[in-house]
Image 1 (cartoon, rainbow, N blue to C red):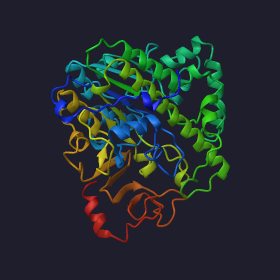
Image 2 (image 1 turned 120 degrees about the horizontal axis):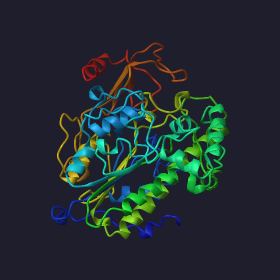
Image 3 (image 1 turned 90 degrees about the horizontal axis):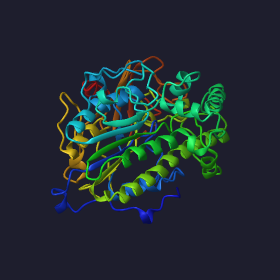
Image 4 (image 1 turned 90 degrees about the vertical axis):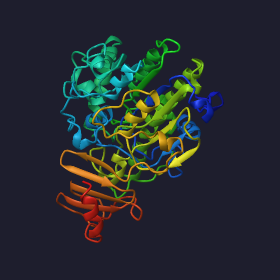
Length: 462
């Protein structure tokens, strides 16, 4: 498996005249875990190399203001599966399973005749923590025709230390590598997950994201020629801990990165090392995107396949001295969203406001499948094809007690207190926070008392 070559990549767009007469399209959905919106190629402020993703952006559309309905794994993925905003989705946090009687867009695709596949961390039954050694528990109920569902990084080691309860830990146990992996993660937990930037002792092929990618290729290769397919590849990276392979480490050491916003938590060198590891995980997933694009070309399906990259939420990565997700700040709620495929306009960047749940309606629209009942999802086809410039007037997000609404300039947050190190205008107790993201893109100044008319207007949308 060599490096990805841009010269080998095929064009994924069809002329508009041919669009209406094409056969039913395929959909490849790359869905990494905890990938923040700005950590992509093309950002001049960051040395991040994502040639495969960049090529999709050149052939399609990059949405620069995409946000998630909830910045936590289980509710975010449940909101997407159901096409519902957080307030109307029954999965409130990671302690809830997806209700089996709640329809999914996967079911609609399957009923429309698609091979509906997924691999990696699907995370729709996070509370149950039992994936089955074959990774197929609940897959038919959710709407998949085939797949391999594995635990996330933390869930895998906490549930499968003695006896595996997911296919990834079962694989490591079968290779005699489980003890090595468990000890490595024990050391990382002692180092607060992020500060340990040493490479994993696992061999390259046993690294979880590489194992997931190979599973996805096996699923894709089993689809008969001519059968329309949907494949969602749920990588566990770039979620913490910041474990990377030795090969990945060699690609990022020596790069310089800006320091986190409003933070003096660690030394400059430590912050840079952590950001190097995070970058390595993103770039490794991008490497696999190149492999998948080559596989699609080999199958003769490049002109009839949509390719989409998004994430379930972002990563604070030390900004405001915060790590991970679960908060209403832009690094946590903002995600990269890029798509290309038949009819999608080429080389476009749009500031249209997008909720990641809009992908559900978009996938069904592309496939000509039945829409979800009681869905809040709105198809992005109009914007992606250049028939519309705007999409939503505002985007909402929430988790547990806090709610957020963003109208393209002002972001109003209710029920969340500004954290230590979050700059001027702090609200020490949970209350109202207002950011003017045009003048304060780093979200350091709470101006809730300066523009009461905006607070009143946005409060009605919460």
